[in-house]
Image (cartoon, rainbow, N blue to C red; front, side):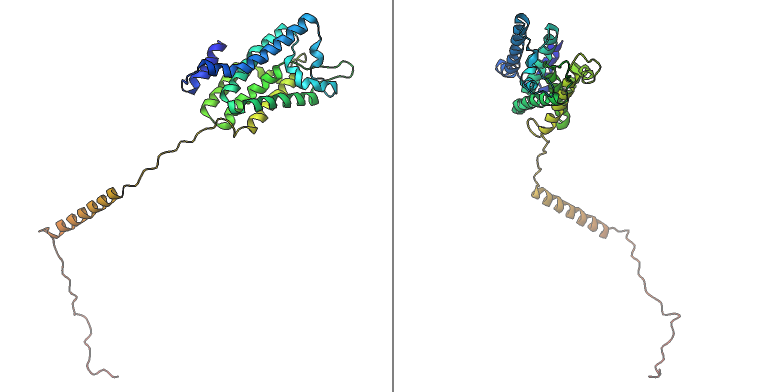
Length: 269
């Protein structure tokens, strides 16, 4: 089902644009490499007991700074990495397809901003150190970026992408609240906020809504002149008809001298 909806979002939403294999490869190659790295790290940690969770984000500790760079590649168990693999692959592929000119800077800023804020504001304890890790921070960042990018741009096709993200991953919004303290809800929250900020910062870059420009109509001076001549002819014809009307009645008026005082010739000076 997810594959069918993803195909619809890529193909149909852009007016049945052709999607050759070369373009498909250019869209998914980097998300696929990211997944390979995540799975290689997880399998190495799982089978060799490397305890790589220590490379996660440990808020407000100097060693925990390294987690800003490495925490998205680390996962706790098979359920954790399986649940994160498909969403991060689909959402990052959508960014590379719909926002290709700004895909890399957007992803890198979401990566860094969410990690730094998690190090500043995440839970930690002096008694039992807390480590935050997993790609879910990026999932929330990518989802919020895709949703708000379409909204900020008021682009019809990109707003369809926003609707697709809500339809597929709208249920993840509960993850930004501290309902389950066993998960890093802070990472989810800061990831979502970073996606909104990056979407707003790049709202004027990348694909934009093209305004409809209506062609300017050329003024036909000859047609206007001929129309004016025709109007003058109709006025002249109308006037000539009125002058030749045999039933015209003409009234003559002459004022009467009755009642007027007679002027005297012997008026004093």
